Image 1 (cartoon, helix red, strand yellow):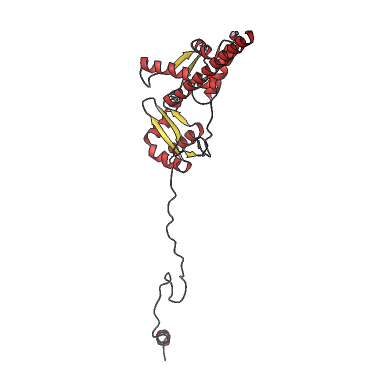
Image 2 (tube, rainbow, N blue to C red; image 1 turned 30 degrees about the horizontal axis):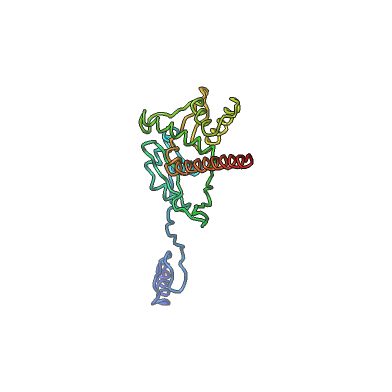
Length: 256
């Protein structure tokens, strides 16, 4: 009489005889003719990471166009130390970061100007070239003169260059003439200063009737732009002289 152990041994031998050539396949490996029993996952590539400081600096530059060390010291320091990284961010926009470390200034410029074919002037889809009026250009030239005098006396990049409105008004009147009304002259000057404040050239008029000239004026008002302004005034003076002589000749002819 066979025992239970004999029956279990007989069953095991029968199963092995039925599949003599069957290979054992691990459960987590694919079979030769079928898909894998367990899905495999490849590690994902990490997304590029931009630090908060770099983001904040780039966004501020795109918003204002410039950074000053005395007004935004932390962002300016990031721009100073991460100039290459910021230029990589700006490159798709055809913009570039320039640093004036002596004056503590970081500002954006158009990297590769695209000419329109009309007077060889560049155009940019994100940057609109703003034209200044003659009065605004004249006031910038006067402000730059005060700024240069300040740098000669105090040194480049040292302290704020402040100028009183009473010092600007007589110089402006030399070129634009006197309207005969002090209130009108003051209003004209304040309006011009308010317009230039939007370009980052000056601060607001303070309680002492002074404005601070921002360091960007050293780059905005360069010798080339000053030469163009001077040429324009010469043309204006020539037109006035021609008109004066022409009127005098006509009067003499009529008199004869």
